[in-house]
Image (cartoon, rainbow, N blue to C red; front, top):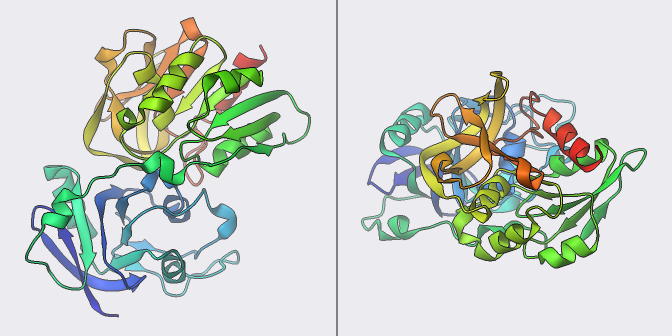
Length: 351
């Protein structure tokens, strides 16, 4: 393998070796603390425009399994300490290196990922480049911004997914970059799922008379999606609503709240979340760089908070028969502690 460099926008340089696609990449560098689940990370559309670094030291040891894909690969680059060249798993179809090459995504290995993670935690998330030589001019790295993510990864046409077993209700899922397991969790509970593009007008959604509407995860700054937020505002109080991740953030914006960018975000399968109603703490899977500002909400009540930094992790809107969470109850691979939230949504639709 040839020598490669990870260059941060503050000028910090880390040396490693190339794998994956032989191309340069510029993106927002973020870290994921998951021990497993790299396939789901690589295929999560919410990573659009980002260079993802895994903090777990060896990645790729169970290969690539297409059945476990969550969506399209949208990340810009991949950083690991070590990648496994010979995976051991009866389900494995090919290697991590082959996957990255097929997607045109460059990777860099042999990097001290613990040092990079510490640097980001201290200094905050920043842009980075994967390249073959250290550039003298860092203006391209510093100028990069993640924009237009929802339009790039969301569905462009409607799709229907039948319920598993007896049909109990019909759900319209507004796709901002949805993970496939959200659809599977709804199907398993007897929901017929109609996936619609992000800009679908509220009047069109309501005209189909769904039993409930779900707002999916997705990439980027939630405040960028002004048209989507306007349509969510028109849905509030008209039909049961359940928002996840980006959907949670945009529901808060539609309700008159505000969002803020976190210093380095929450990404991984070990984020502790406290349910303020019951006092229980759940371990959750998360992938986000923005958060709802709890104090900004003119409606609803904060239901969940992050045990580490006390940021908002979920809001109940009883006046609108709606709720939202920042974490992923459909997590796969990840903790399943909060999958009961899908049951709550079904009960809201069919009490």
